[in-house]
Amino acid sequence: MAEILFYHLTESTLEDALPGLLERSIDRGWRAVVQTGTEERRDALDQHLWTFRDDSFLAHATDREAHPAEQPVLLTVGPDNPNQAQIRFLVDGAVPPELGGYQRAVFLFDGHDAAQLEAARTHWKTMREAGHTVTYWQQTPDRRWERKA
Image 1 (tube, one colour):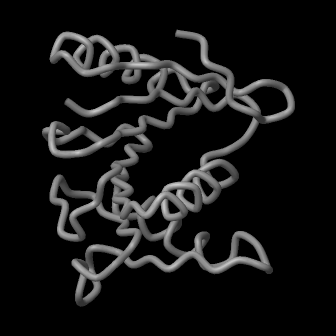
Image 2 (cartoon, rainbow, N blue to C red):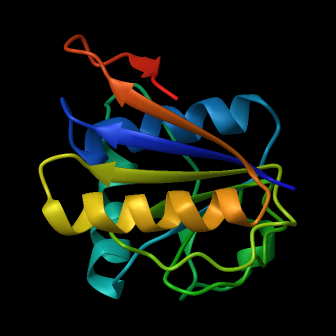
Image 3 (cartoon, rainbow, N blue to C red):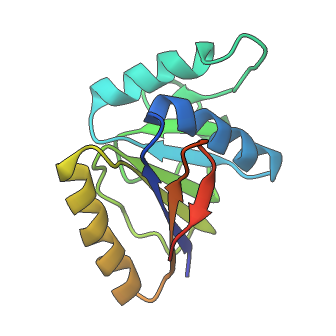
């Protein structure tokens, strides 16, 4: 069973939070898949990850590009795992595929968006019922993560 984490964004945007989480995943030696709800969001994140910080480089590609199996971070709208990622990030209402093959899955959701909050509640219930270990993390005012459940 995968460890499932719910990250409740209250102080920063997805664009602010995601790069650091991806960097930490890569530092662990993991490959990552980021599943978005739309192609437009996938493409916007693709552009953002190239420029999010002047002193950083986060190698990644989208599922539209050649050789997805070779990518340390793959952005996708689909359920596949062509780069054999150990961690899957689900953002903007992406519908999770079967998560049993991952070490960890992370649901990131905007605390100021009612639809994302409701979707997160539904996914929480579904993941717990499926037998996954589920934890809930919320941002503090200084943008750190604090475990709440």
